[in-house]
Length: 103
Image 1 (cartoon, rainbow, N blue to C red):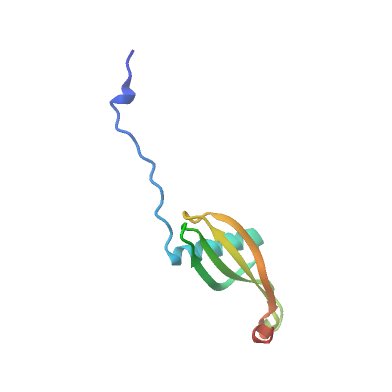
Image 2: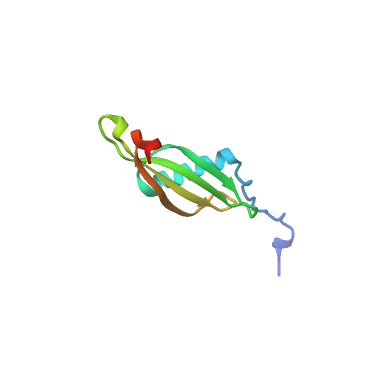
């Protein structure tokens, strides 16, 4: 029986390196925009846990209005695993753009 598997070099599957803070923020923004269908506005918070998971606050425009100062914005909290895949997300805040400090 000819067993060539032992003669061939083993292929190692490479895991992507863990995302940096900047990369985790971009991944979270992409995930939230894709899941909600809303336009990305900004990152409001970013933290990495000891186990490598990321928690990212992502601000989106929920409703565009005229004038833009009356747009409805929302902040979603996204949780990413150490590789940057989305584990969970939830809306944690919603407000009118011009009333940010008045809440």
